[in-house]
Length: 354
Ligand code: OGA
Ligand code: NI
Image (cartoon, rainbow, N blue to C red):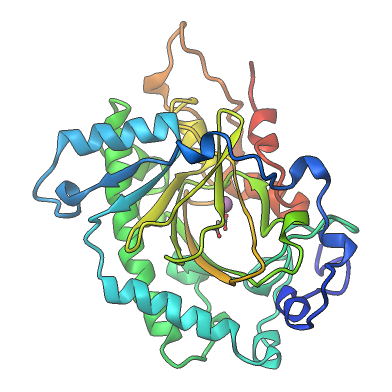
């Protein structure tokens, strides 16, 4: 599909129009809406992990490795504190992207994206005509490998956006490398296992700046429908003062309470497959609200696109056979979400062999 099937609706324009009712296309069926039910949300929260011990690589810490690995088994979602990344870079990144979304529409439209690569300014994921729409706009960029990086597709305003985004993504990728080692060791594999399975230096990374404008009827819609991330590891930097992200745990939706200065990490489908289901890619979604806009930056750290993906052989035995078909590459895998949009964990479940 070369183009979007319908004229693109910028959610920010809807939000700023002052209409009290959201268009029908954004109204979710009752079963998908956020309910007022506040069961385990009150008591459960995703793990908060202090990684002071590993941000500095000279100090490998077995306990931190175990804690991370357990969080991937149980939740597939956690917040990292004491990560050692430069606080100014993190704050600046949110600032420049917030500024970008507040530029006049004509500046942003110059970067309007298409479903061919998704790079640029977008307002939907998926190309099915009449599909239900989510209450958000975004900006999507290829970051690594460098030959997929096209600065013409990067906003030139605000002035410091490019430099800041470069610095930010470099820091986050460094963190991903450390996490990959920890996650490999946590499975009893060689510490280089995931790094190599992702294609060594040819790993891929892309960035999605997500913008959730204020919504007059937040109880009827979602900022982002339920999905698991298709790739390897996602690192999310979100507004400290606005919550919205919810993670599904044992069938219940748990709201993530942002810890100032922390980053949120979640496991994607490729790691679930490579770990043969030991690590979980959690389903998540975003709730919107009528009071405050929300900004988040998602860095997707992914395997090189053309490597066949499958469970690590070292984890398999007659008692533990491969649980997934492994005849796909990440490029093939991600076409599904790019065509169909977010569909919970449907895609991954459909690859299960038993
Ligand atoms: C995503 C995502 C969550 C958020 O972009 O895949 O899940 O809080 N974002 O914006
Ligand atoms: Ni996601």
